[in-house]
Image (tube, rainbow, N blue to C red; front, side):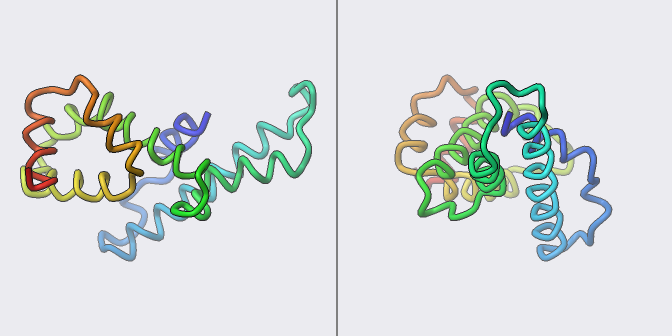
Length: 144
């Protein structure tokens, strides 16, 4: 559900609706997280969910979706690891082929992705069956 709501929101709020600057990007990402958390809370609070979740449980899931306390909350970190692993496994190859993404930019993106992950996430990523191109770029990003 986490990846579904966060990935769906990327298309509901176009990146182009915010300035193409680092602050614009960060504002856009914060808006996406907020909207995804709201959507998840609405879904989980629906009467069709049986047994019903408590407000505390719904609030906890919304906080996870917002990535609150990322580096100190192990549950939030696991979700971030999952999002990064999904990117590497299912989205990387298509993303890397985009004409607006050169090798230098991709290496930077991989460094940032790696920085978001826990040591456990790193270990899982290194065990994945990735394309040769992905492996080469990850090695460059990690300075291997």
